[in-house]
Structures are given as structure tokens and as C-alpha cells.
Amino acid sequence: MPYSDNRAYTLKGCFESSLARNSERTALHFEETDETLTYADLDSQSNAVANALADRGVTPGDRVALMLSNRIEYIIADLAIIKAGAVKVPLNDMLTPDEFEYMLSDSGASTAIAGPKFTATLDSLHPDLPEIERLIAIAEGQSLPSAFTDFELLVAEGRSETAPTVDIEPSETVAHYYTGGTTGKPKGVIHSHRNMTMNVYAHAIELGITGDDTLLLMTPLPHSAGLFLWGGLLTGATMVVRDGFEPEHALQDIENRAISWTFMVPTMIYRLLDHAELDSFDTSTLETLVYGAAPMTANRLEAGLDEFGPVFLQFYGQTEVPNLITTFGKNEHQQAVNAGQDERLESAGQPCLMADVKVVDYESGEELPQGEIGEILATAPYTMEKYFERPDKTAETLVDGWVRTGDIGRIDQTGYLYLLDRDSDVIITGGMNVYSTEVEDALDRHPHIREVAVIGIPDPEWGEAIHAIVVSKTPSLTESDVTAFADENLADYKKPKSVEFVDDIPTTPYGKQDKVALRDRYWEGETRDIA
Image 1: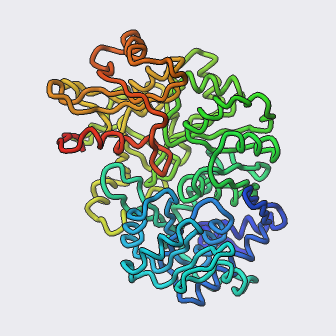
Image 2 (image 1 turned 30 degrees about the horizontal axis):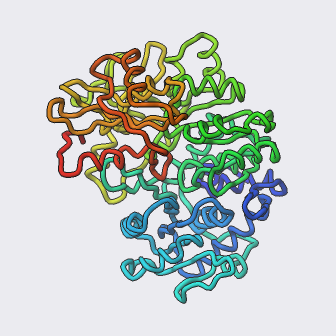
């Protein structure tokens, strides 16, 4: 077949190219139901659903919302939407009903596909969402409300031999994601086929995903894991999918499925390292453990390297520049440990092959010299097209092809990027800026602290006081223990004025510490003069 942009730069073309090489290989295994699909199976079932959607009136450009996460049907539906020329709107299954309603309405979705946990939610929201014309759900043997069509019916009745005949241009929209909403209402982020295809290629290259790999995906597919999935589909890898994370299940899968590649957010890695039976499992097949969404501290990384070897690979990105702004590679981790470079271990690495990064003055936008602190800007061939129906926010965020990330950081003399904070998380105490990550990194070195989050809380004298929220490894740890450790490791103005002990630190649906939720209970009725 002659070269075609429509084949090389559309997700449909990516999958077709992989299918031609890998049709009989195992594409997916879903642990909870013991289901397995080859690439040929995935192709035929997604063809069936794509044709069934088209027969029911879904046309190119229509939004189709996915209210389900880690299951085989999500992946079939994702590919089917793409084959139909429609636009996928992945919605994290940790959202609240109000958040679902907002995103369904804001996106203008005309079709929604719900998993078993969310059928009742979608049914209750539907009267207030008249633009949704088609309701589809996974029945799992249960009766569905009368307005719903069973997803299995789409698989059974659709034509499975070929996908719908649809001309898809690289410039057309394929994905409508939502930001985490850390600074207000979530915004719809629009990505074209060309953007996302370049991003999938970048995932395979930067994160080392090959056809020889078996990937373990445990985090939500509507978020980063869905991009790892596509990196695997491109290269012909096998994906083992779990609906959630439990340390023992993850260790069993690594041993029993010969997992070579996986992704975890830092809190998952911490739970794995703290698992009492860790050493009884064979993890020798694990070659790459990717982490992101939040940084890991040097002492935890060193413990992980001691346990698993040089497998750790960090990425930094965001919805507007999906996952890949910088990476910090496996060898770089080990080299930093060997050289005693604890600070280097806490960097986010260097720009990806197809990306560039700079740090600018927050007010003037002028690029700053190496070592100076400012706002991080990023550019890549897979940056977003725009925010959906938000031209004002698009103009604020996209500046001459660069994305203003809203993150504060610096670049050192060797080109390594260091993330210091979200601009909204900076603590201003007594007129001094304190970056919460600096305090967290210092406190995390305490041998009895499992996890820590640092926020600013109202203080009549200082404006904001530094408050540490701690998950302890031992019930004997006291506030005075923490403050004494801070006295030895932090400048006076960076020391916590108060310490709170909790069982768990809340996270957003995307695996990051939810500092908005942590702050809200302290700032109710108060004004915080930080965006």
C-alpha cells in the first residue's frame, strides 16, 4: 500500500499497521474475568461496535463519552469510536455524579457508554442532558433501564469484517480530554489525530515499549494508562489489564504473567515497597517501572532501586502535552545513585526527543537563565489544538506554540528540569515563597514517614502558615518528632508550624495529591491570594 498521511498520522492507521504484523498475537488479557483477545479479535469486535454505532446515527465528529475504566469493553469502545470517525471523551471512573454531568454537558456528547457501576448514574443524569441521544451500558447479566442498549448487542449485531467507510484526516479531532481541574472547572482539551499519533510514537520511543513487552496496566485507562495502551498497540505488545491496584495482585501478575513493563504513581510504588511479602515474589522479569503524576523522593527511589534494580523511568507531562515533556531514564537513575547525587534523583529529567522546555519569568514571559526559578513552558508536535469552546483560556495557555504549564521550576546547568510546585500550591508565608515540594522532600527522609503533603493554611501573623499532613509508618511518631526533624533539615521559614496525622492523603482521579481538598477545610470563609 502506498504511503498515506491518513494511514501514518491517524490512530486508525496506526492500529491497521500494527494489525498487519501482529494479528494472531495476544493483545489484551483482563485479569478480573480471565478474558483474552488477540489483535484480530480486537479488530473484529471494534469493527462490529463501530458499525453498530454508525447504524444508530453516530457520525464523524460526534462526541462519544466513555464512563467506564479498566475492562475489555473500554478498549473495544475506544478503538470503535476512532474507526467510526467520532471523538472519544474519556471520563475517569473516579468522578462524582456532578463532575460526570458537567463533562457530559460541556463536551456536547451525543452518545454515552457506561460501565456497570455508572449505569444508574447516567440514567439519573439523562433527563438533564437532552443532547445525549444514545445510551449504552454493559449489562453483565442485569436488566438495563429501557432507554439503554446493551453493549454486547453492539458486538453481536455489528458487521465485524471491516470498519465503517470513513475518510479520516490527520487534522480532525480524535480525543476530547478533561484537565484535572486543580485551578477551577476542568477544561476540555482537544487533540487531533496527528497530535495523538505523534504522541503514541513518542510513547513507544521514550518509554521503551516494544512488541516483546508484556505491559501491566492498573491505573485508569481514561488517563495516562490509555496512552500506554496505545504505545503497546502500536508495537504489538501484550497488555495485561487490572481494574485497580492492590500490591499483592500486582506482585502476583508480575510473577505469573512475566510482566516486563508497568506504570505506577508514587503512592502505588510506596505500597509495593512496604508490602510485607515483597521478597517472596519473583519480579525478575520486570525491566521498566514507569512513574509519573507526582515526583518520588530520593530515599524512596534508592529503596526501589535496591529492590528492583535499574528499572525506574520517570516522565513529566500534562493533558495539554500528554505525558511526555521530559523523561528521566533508567540509567540516569542508577548513575545518580552511584554518584551520590540525591538532588539529581529528584529532577524530572531532560526534554523528550520531540519536545522542548524553557523556564520564563511569570510576569514578563522572558526566558530565564539556567538555575533561576520561573514558570515552565513546553512545546512538542503533540501539544493540544485548543481548549474546547474556551478561546480566552486557549490564548492564555498557548503562546507562540508553547504551552504554559502552570508549573514552577528551574533548569540546571546540565539541562535537567526540577519541578518545584504548581503555581497554585506555592505557600507565601511572611512574604517568602515556599515550594511545598521542598518541604515534602525534606520530611520524607524521616524513616517513620510513609507519605507527606504540605499546604499553606490561614495565619493572622504570617498570612499563610506551613502545615504538614503526614501518613506515619508507626503510631509512635509524634508532632514533636516531625518538627525536630524539620529543625535539622529545613531553613526556619520553611519549617511546618503544625503537623496533622492521617491514615491516607486524598488523591485526584489522576493520582496526584489533592491539595485543593486538603486546603479547602482550612480556607472556608477565607480569601487566599494565590490563583
